[in-house]
Length: 343
Image (tube, rainbow, N blue to C red; front, side, top):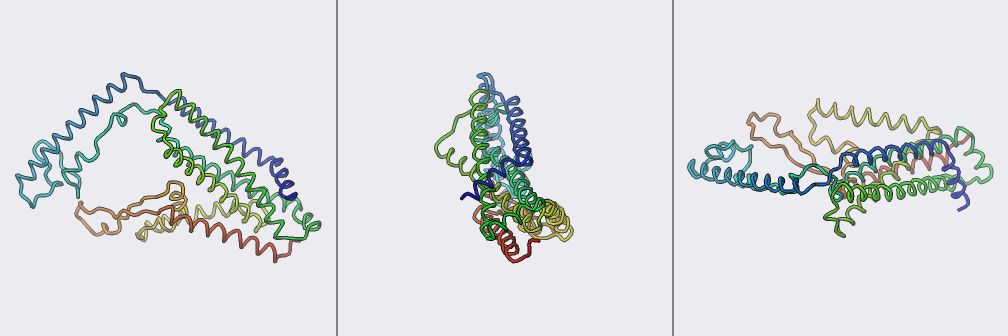
């Protein structure tokens, strides 16, 4: 416990940690100012206009639907709604039906001028916070242990406490506590700022207990991404004994697997290539489900009616992939540290 407290004090005193935290606050502040400046609370005139526009759109959709049905009845049972939507109506997209015309009617809220809505916009902002925390956690974790190796601090600690596993785990625990504390504080400040903006210049309607629970879970997953990134950055830097190893590994992964992999998949016309990218599982973790479209079956089809296959990666699928990957990197780092000479 004393080791963890000492490492926490050392972590918070590092210049890179303070610079990274300041950078986080600056970015969050700029986003908050931008949202506040662009937010607009709807006036009564805006609501009246939105209601009139919604009624007009619904009436036009109903007329188009009736024309579509008339065209279908006149053309016979074998006719396709995509080919004829009725007199005076535009043809429908492939594989569509007349009922699709009225399936998604616009509401008054859909036609209001863009404004900040807490229930709708807060989850996206928390996901953005998760991305920022991931960058912060990875960079701070890598620099924290990288600086210890460069200064000889790891070897000095091993002289006084020659228990490598305890040292490795103690430093990691202090790092995770620090990143967790930053994540909790920033999440609270983030929500407070969004609440003030929504109250003064936006909409707070619809904030039910269920919506708050969903928002809290989104925030928890965002903080979890930051913690996982800290573990990976720490483990790789511990493995390479310097900060540059972790940063180089991250850049190499993005260039080779994320960018290069997409280029190779496009050339080879791979089926569902997104399942091989780590970013797809990160997206699924943050959003609970990541949806994709596979156009493989439409490659040799000339008919424009061919539709892509829709598929998704769910939170349940992303969790083991990310969790096992993080634990594997950490385990390799710990095992090699225990067995390798530190001099």
